[in-house]
Amino acid sequence: MTGRMALAALLACLAAPAAAQQPSYDCTRAGTPTEHAVCGDSALARLDVQMADLYRATARRTEGNARRGLRAEQLLWQQWRNTCGGDTACLARRYRERIADFDPSAAVQPTTPAPGVRRLRNGRWEVEMPDGSIRWTPLDGGSGGIIYPNGSQLTLQYVQVDVVPVEIPPPPTGGAPWVEAIETLLVRVVRDYLPPQDHPAYDALHAGYPPPERVVRHIDAIRILGR
Image (tube, rainbow, N blue to C red):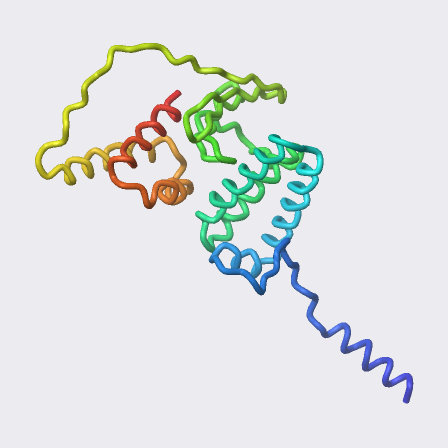
């Protein structure tokens, strides 16, 4: 009788499903499509745990302004991640990019070079150059830098120079269609620079701003991406 009970217990253990991989946060408190998607996908949950461990390890090695900057950067990345919604492929790409920020050795290397690729990553614009280097600029258009193929980096400082002011004519009466037409043209240019998978995320970054301010932001994006 004891042997049969032991065998039954063993079979019950083997039949029980393995516990699903949990992310770094409590899934019972998940409130966004992104959080629910990560909770429902073991591969994404593992990436979330790996990213969170690397973030905490990096935070422990920093202090003061550097730690506050790291926290602000992480919050910005979370907003960028959330633009994926429940798209698991998009989320996997965002997580792998963030993991590579903390641990460059974990970066997935492309099988073929992709010069000219422009992307939004880690709160900045990046452009892959034909020589393998990466030119980057913050979203606000401030100073940027260059990451060379050997891993060395160069920070660029842009100098403001005085120029002759150009007076921009006011929009005609009933200016909303005029602004919309300008924005349509500008967005078309931006989309030519960015890969298709980043188009929805770019739109999400500008959602909620009034049309005139969106136009200015599109112009800034084109100026940065076109460098």
